[in-house]
Image (tube, rainbow, N blue to C red; front, side, top):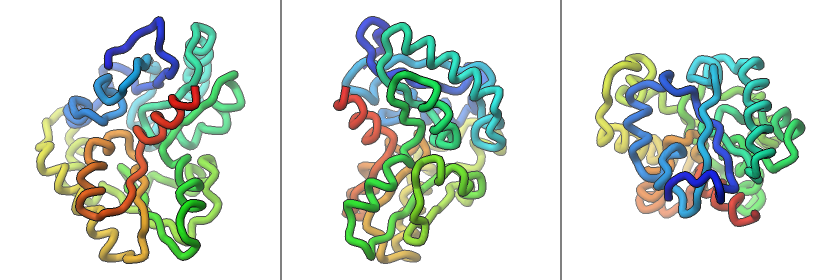
Length: 237
C-alpha cells in the first residue's frame, strides 16, 4: 500500500533522510519493515524527523530531537493524522512525553505489547524480547513502555551477530540479508535453548517483522512485533 496524504490515519516518525546506514536501507526493502509502504494494508504517512538517527535515538536519546518529534507529530495531527507511531522501538523512552503532548494515540514501540503478552499467558510463562542492541535497551525504556514485571523477561540483542553488527560498525557497507535472516532465527532458537519456559517473542526492532513468520514456523510460538502493534492500532481507528 502506498502513502496517501488524504486518507492515511497513522503517521510514522522516521529517522532523518541521508542518515540511515546502508544495511538498514537494505532491510527497508523487505515487506514487514516499518518504513516499507508495502508492509501495510492501509495508507500510512512517513515523516523524517530532523536530527533523528542511530546516535540520537538508539545510542544517546536526545531531548532536542524529542522536541522536534513533538512539533512534527503535532503538525501531522493538525492535518488529520489520527495516531502516531515511530520507526524505531528505542523511541519507547519518549512514550510518555509524546503521548502527553499530542491529542492522539501514540504507540512508540512494540515493547508496549509486553504487558499485554504477560497478561494473556500463564503466570509461569517467560517472554523473550529480541532487540537491535541489548546494551542500549535500558530499564528506562522498559518502564516508559509500562513494563513493571521484568523477572520473566529475557532480552537478547543482535549486536552479538557479526553480519547484523556490520550495519552499525560499517554503515557505508552492504550486508548479506540471507545471513541476517539466519542470525535473527538463530537468536530466537538460542533463546528457547537458554529459556525453555519462553512462551512468546516480542521483537523490539522495527526491522525485524520480516522474520516474524519464520520464527513462528520454527518455534510454534506467537511473535508480537511492530506490525502486529500498528495493525491493532489501525483497527481501533
